Length: 362
Image (spheres, rainbow, N blue to C red):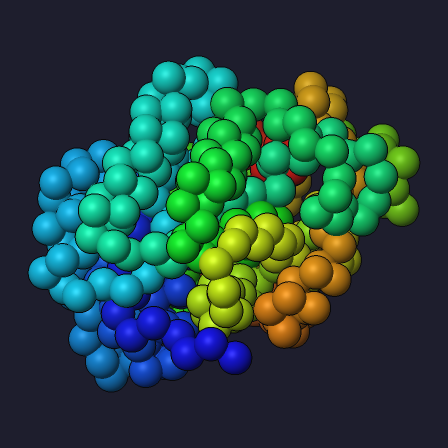
């Protein structure tokens, strides 16, 4: 096994997934530098990360689109590898503001990679998404499944994957891992770090938790007439701590130059109603909901084939749906309004409870 690079730059490291990745890296004895523009995150998450790990990290308030600043950080901090999580991530919003997504995600990655090349840092783990697959033609989804994202967010992820392949073809010194996430949920077991969406959440579990704690009145489930056991859509939910460990495994197993693309999922699907019932069981709270009509574009079932990740990275998910819900509930109880300084959300009827198509967040 190739030794993990010592100093890791984590772009978007103050976000939901990024903060958990930082914990995994620090716990593994690595040095961490975080770059985040805090547009959809909170610096308080990094203070808590350091408290959990008993180690410090370096934080730089910066944007990946600023190539000169990123280059200076890479050089000054002695960075030897990058985990790239920064980017806009909401499927619905990407349909409204596509050019903003292309600028932030695609152009931002181009500037980051250019800075890395100048600094001679050629190990990169990229946060991709299962949205690159589009509408499933067969299940489970493996890495050979045809690609066809159906929204601008997913297309930015696919374009970046293709861009990184071209980068390697032009310079075969690069070590690149493309990690296709399914649906991250849960929180760190301490309850100190978790998902704190700004504004209306885009993901199922934060909605459920906010209803359970009384911040929102009820859920609206988009359809209960799918060809599934309970009629609601099924998705592959993965604990964020398992997801974070996948990044560390990717760093460890990028043994030689090349591009490795793998799914990070559990290989199992859970329905919307199953998530709600599990959350009610672990929280002891009722989660009221209403059934609405199907949402255009949603598919009945989506889940990963994680075989390649197990073979190539020696990685697999280990945490159950029950643990995902229990950890998220602990986070919600200890942080009813999110991190300090997060604007309070207005209570009301939730309008999105099923991840859109293969909607996953990075």
